[in-house]
Image (cartoon, rainbow, N blue to C red; front, side):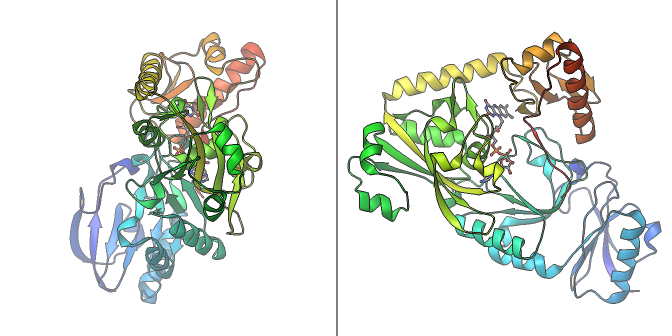
Length: 418
Ligand SMILES: Cc1cc2nc3c(=O)[nH]c(=O)nc-3n(C[C@H](O)[C@H](O)[C@H](O)COP(=O)(O)OP(=O)(O)OC[C@H]3O[C@@H](n4cnc5c(N)ncnc54)[C@H](O)[C@@H]3O)c2cc1C
């Protein structure tokens, strides 16, 4: 048995797992029998490291070059508990090479990233700062068959309490190329320039409809994109200013509010397809429909989007944004963590109204509740978890169906552990 640094924490929830060093006791010890170290979550050795997390929040990163004895011990522990997986150190190093050491975290609690504040740890959480890194990382993970998922602000995602056994690729990175917003005047932009930007469109047609085109990185928040346009007295996307997502997430979801949706002003998008080709798709090819798109259906990743904007007095744009944001504050439970509307709007009806009519306002499972303020929202009123959230969604579906015969379909995306 080797000496190693053992870090022990008395933690029960993934959300209690702070950054390294917080709430941990560290001491040197010998590796002891795995069944004795139930609450041991982190072991660090000079040549590498072995993480063992609490059984409820499993993931383990085990060095490839770790001596056989330690590997055997850790594997026995893992297999006994049935929850610890092994990730080759080389994979982590490769991902680090692609995204940079400052942009990768091992064992990152997803509850710290999701707007509903739910989710165990992601084995790897990698932020991408430009579309080249996004493409390289996707290519690497796909070629090596490593589970992964692209997220924006995770404002429409219900992660699992058990976390994500793979790589979460996060594009929500401020002040980097991935969230850059660029403007081009349609009058002064030539067809050649448009072609060199690889935007497959006729400039004369764009000129008829729009004063400017805006190219936005997938990681830009909708609010900052709308703000950047407002500062140039360019409107059209005011409806999106209060939606707390990124451009990539909004294109994937065809996000919409107050009578408009992304589909209304998008000209096209640069995407990475499943075979890792970088392509331009025009509006028709993006096939945007109510909370759906080719991005979702065809498993594309949106790298950046192109929108058409029109000149408007800045005050008019400002007033519109203020008015819509006030409406949100008046109607929506914005002081609680949520994912916005829990269910899609069924044909000819409103989910919130159907939930209200089924007597479910305030209905709770554990700390997950149907908001009293807006029955369309499922809110986290304390220590809500994914198990209770799923149970709440299921019970609401059943009760609404019993009451009016309509099947509600979740708008929230429920994410499996891998
Ligand atoms: C308080 C609140 C209010 C909301 N109001 C609205 C509203 O008015 N209208 C509305 O439509 N939604 C609303 N939402 C839901 C949510 O904000 C939107 O669905 C938003 O578009 C999600 O963007 P995101 O960046 O958070 O995506 P995420 O939640 O991170 O991801 C959503 C989906 O998009 C995919 N995705 C993310 N980025 C990319 C990418 N670059 N390429 C390909 N796929 C990607 C993910 O894989 C996932 O399938 C609200 C949410 C909250 C919390």
